[in-house]
Amino acid sequence: MSDGRQDSCDATVCVTNAAGAGGVVLLCEHAASAIPARYGDLGLRAEWRESHAAWDPGALALSHHLSQALDAPLVSGCVSRLVYDINRPPEAAAAMPVRSELVEIPGNANLTEAQREERIASVYRPFCEAVAALLDARARAIVTVHSFTPVFFGKARPTEIGILHDADARLAEAMLAHAPTHRRVDRNMPYGPEDGVTHSLRLHALPRKLPNVMLEVRNDLLTTPEDIATLAEELLAMLRPALAAVPVEVSHA
Image (cartoon, rainbow, N blue to C red; front, side):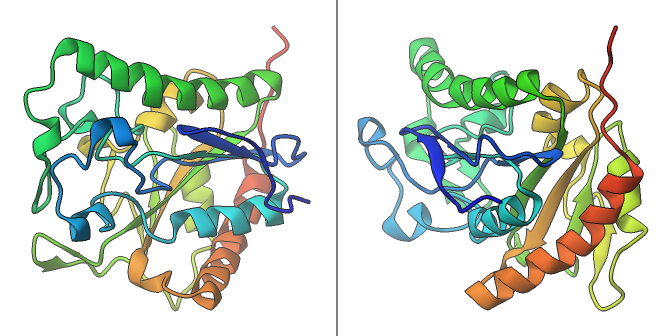
């Protein structure tokens, strides 16, 4: 089982439990709010640098619980998504956003091609390479872990757990079949593939034909260690039978 040890970690990407023998690779793209010194503070007020716009509060702790329970490698991002959102391709405007909900990001305005390429090379590609290395060594299902704010543009979100998928819905549907009755669990909410949020699934899972799902948990349910442990168990109660029902098929061609 994973003990939470980081097998490798630099300023961009951390890999925890790389030798985990479980059938899943976990990704936590928005694990951190850190802005490397070379980017200054992006012109952000202090409160915005730690807000949900900068990262997914609770997602990394939740990912560590899942990693330990599933003996799964975990790849987590170490840089704020306001520098580069590694769940977006380089050509997407949201990869280096100039605005996130109500937050203006002056440090992302009018970036030169050289500045954009530096962020792609130093933040995005190392994460992608770390994920690919684990999957190339051993095919596994991919589960990405995120949290979301309960109020967005002033509108409350009733969804508590979102089970998201792109073109391959096998794992998502198997999880939804085991959804708890005491939670509001929704398919492709509060986002869906039309919002561009399934990039990691498209990049790493679909070409390899690997079962995959994106988990979104409302962040007001992840405010204490006890909350996080509870949500981890609820997710595992959906995920474990789903993984058994949709095993990874390794091609020998």
